[in-house]
Structure formats: structure tokens, C-alpha cells
Image (cartoon, rainbow, N blue to C red; front, side):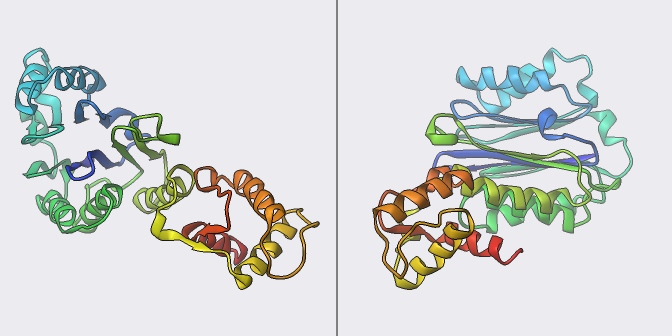
Length: 289
């Protein structure tokens, strides 16, 4: 009823999970991760306590194999569980119980160096293999690679019952809003006919509101951009700005207030630069797309 992937990016210290299920609100059940410990998925007849307990064990230095063995050893329903574990470094571990293997469709896992994909009641083993292949072929930020992997699993046949909810959880030291929370990304779709596509859309919103600007995305506000932004600000109620293509302190202050209202909090500027991603989003909104 569910397929998921845990992925790791050692270069930037990020670790994350993407999951989809024909069950509402899957993220709150399946996805567990902590920036100082690792990541765990618990699905099939899931026991969320395995996520909490397993992260505690990983945080104490247990390997993925040791953590998985400890969780299964104390679980009388181990044959109904599907669990995957990944530490901050070292190989991952996965378990699919005997009863889960007997369900309709295909159930199991596929492991790679920095990823483990698991699923049950799938159209076939190709689903988890496609997820691993997409993750390993992906470039750029971990969140997008995980989303690409989830979409690849869907496109390879997904689960037999269809789709309903999806979630993306990525942790890293100093992640989260203002860099004060290890949860770098925490986005979920509770109920949607196309949950993976909706998750990707929500993630792009999350990036704009939660992530700071990249230096490479900052450009000077030239005359043409200044005139364009003044039209935007005037439509938002800032009607006392000087005409023309100049960009002075009053414009900077008005733009900062506008960006706060529009939830670009972590990309507000106190200079004459504009974030290209913010500018593109402003243009998209004006065009009604």
C-alpha cells in the first residue's frame, strides 16, 4: 500500500525520505528522521514507535543493521512490518515481513550506497529499482532527487491500489526556518488525486519561503526591473514611491514589507538586489499561472 525511499547526500550532510501511499496522511506514520541520528521508514502494518526508538538507537551510535535487529527482536508483529533504516554513514538495512511478502502484488526493498527504496503491494519489483536508478542519476539538491525517485516509482507502475497521499522529510544540521531546526524540509500532502505532483508543487513553495537566497541568484535591480517592481508594489498598495527606474531606500523598505506579506521571509533584502527565484514567482503570480 506504500512505497518510499530514504536518501543521503554526504557532501552536504542531508538525509531525507520521500513516501507515497493509497492511505491518507502517510508522512506522519512512515517518515522519521533526525539530523543527529539518521532516517527510518516504517510501513505495511506500521509501528511509528519503531521510528522514534530506532532514531534513539542510531543517535547512540548503533549501525543500521544493529538498529533494525533491535526493533525486530522486541516486536511480536515483525512479520507484518516493513522497515528501512539508514544512519548518517554506513550501509542501510531493510526488512519485509513474511506476511507482507504474501500480500497481493510485489513487496520488498532495493538498496544502493546512499539510498534504500521499499514498497508493498506494488505492481512489481521495477518500482523500487526505478526509484533507486532515478535517485542515483539525479543531480542537485537532495529534496528534488527524492521527489524524482518517487515519481519514477509511480511511473514504473506504483502500487496496485493507486495514490492518495505523499510526504517529503529532509533533515540536516542547521536546517529549517531561519536555520534553527534540523528539519530542513517537512512537506506533506494529506489527500490528493495526484499527491506526488502536488508534493513537488508544495516543495517549490517551501523553498521560496524557507530557504535563503543563493548568491548566484541575486542580480541588481536595474531600471527595467525597478519599473516592473514598482508596478507590483503599487498594485499591492504602495502608491507613494517615486516614478521611473530608480530604486532608493523607500523602494527597498516597501519591497521588504511586500516580501514579508507574500511569505518570501528568508529572501528579504536591504540592498538593491533581487532574488531571481522570487522575481520569477512574482511574475508567475501576476500572470495568473
